[in-house]
Image (tube, rainbow, N blue to C red; front, side):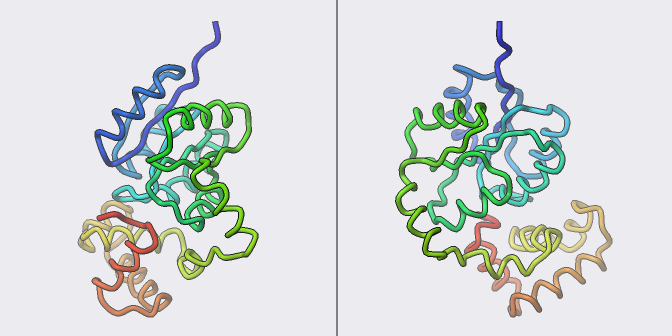
Amino acid sequence: MTTPPRVLLADDHTLVLEGFRRIVEQRCEVVGAVEDGRALLDAATRLRPDLILLDISMPLLNGVDAARQLKKLLPDVKLIFVTMHADPAYVSEAFKAGASAYLLKRSAARELEQAIDSVLKGQYFVTSLLTKDLVTTLSAGQVGLFAQRQELTPRQREVLQLIAEGRTIKEIASLLNISPKTVEFHKAQIIFHLNLRTTAELTKYALAHGLTSA
């Protein structure tokens, strides 16, 4: 008897996680479910799943930046993004981060099943809701949404997300295991690179670029 693939679920909405579980359990073993990006990294390291379903907008660490770290920790893990973000720039960024599939939360359940089958065979999958627009946009080179964001280092993106979520300097330092002075330095560099001035402007930027949904 073939061992079913082991799947970890990540989304910050409990009802969404329950919906994923009902679909996925028909063919996979669900080994865990988490509601933020940092919990995802911890659970993935501990549980070592074959496949991870994740959202882009998650607290503490967004899905794209979590994906980059996951692929370093577990190079063979397959990542399926299921998100509300339909902009082709998000799709492009997700695949650059190591995604094998990209679906929308309004995609049909059968597409999630198809995506799982495809990625386990080493193939890629994009929801039919996006395929036409995605090909048009990528072929035209119109994926500039993340261009400015790429001026930031991975650590700066982490700090920016936590600032946008209302975390204090001390809280950020504790979460990232760095000193408060280092957090202040990163914040200053972010402000410089993005040409922004206030926390409100940083928060608006983070929201616009999918770093947080808070």
